[in-house]
Length: 136
Image (cartoon, rainbow, N blue to C red; front, side):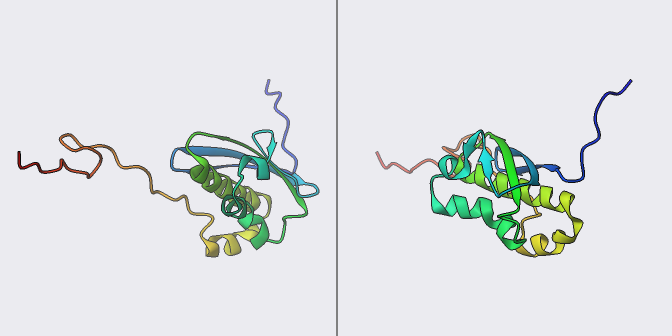
């Protein structure tokens, strides 16, 4: 017998990804608190650029003061994690309210950024960096 409870309509979950980072996002009605890995997002993302990136889907949809966001993010570095959180928040907002999709899609928040580190090739120092020529 399946004992899972049906999720309420007031809450939405989504996963966002960027580079090697993956963010599990949960949004629910509240006062506008954003918690990333059990810390306030301003502590987890100390720079203003990353904080603005995380807030951008909520600002576009004017929901920054009416929704609480809880995020678990793993992998990657700060920039990739901020991008993953932004992607996850945008996807959760669309799951919560389908009418927000055109605004988020127009800003490019619904598209998963496919750019990632290129693999190292044999005979090279890095993915494309060749050996330096030496005369002697």
